[in-house]
Length: 301
Image (cartoon, rainbow, N blue to C red; front, side):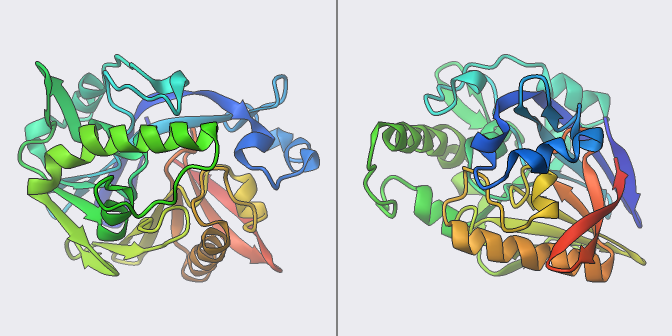
């Protein structure tokens, strides 16, 4: 578990799953072998396995305590899910809720659930299986969901282009299942937001499109301290060094690269701690400008 404070806001993470996902340059397709090898001393073992050349990541939820309320940032994959697009993480049966309890959080304690975007590994524990029905896991929470993502991924809206090949068809089928089991059951208690949404005096959501149409970041400002939870704008620390590199999961690569550079630039200028969704421990970084790229100043968490 990682834990740190941003002013008066207490932060810790609850890990659902951690391990190797795929070859490094499958996940970050534009990266070069030397981007990984030259940085082996700090990429390995948390973020890359040199022996297998595979990208390593965590699926986790960030738990924030702010102004007396418990706020969850992203909710992982969830148990009992049919996920044809990612067999590695299908039909999980983890003790995630017990792990949440170890940091003093019961489902009924959660006031706000933030979904930075609608991908399977960010919305899964929105719900749990009760008999044959999916029901909200956090019965007293308001779920904050970017409206642009709801519109894009809702099968009834038909916003996505028809699949061009079998792999894309599996992704579309998987996205439909994600919407049905993890989004539809919480829409009656959700706030669909656009542009910017203030949660409390410390926490503000801002649109950061590209990875998905509604991809967002959560900014934390308390006292003199700053942090930004960037979701999937960063999958690997390699993207800090070369922000033009997208992940293979980005829906709009050009927009994602522009957004990534802008968010990292503001983080460097304002000394914001950058907290990505999938960095295994240590899970957060402070960055500085280095010409048209960025360097990592320190690790946190």
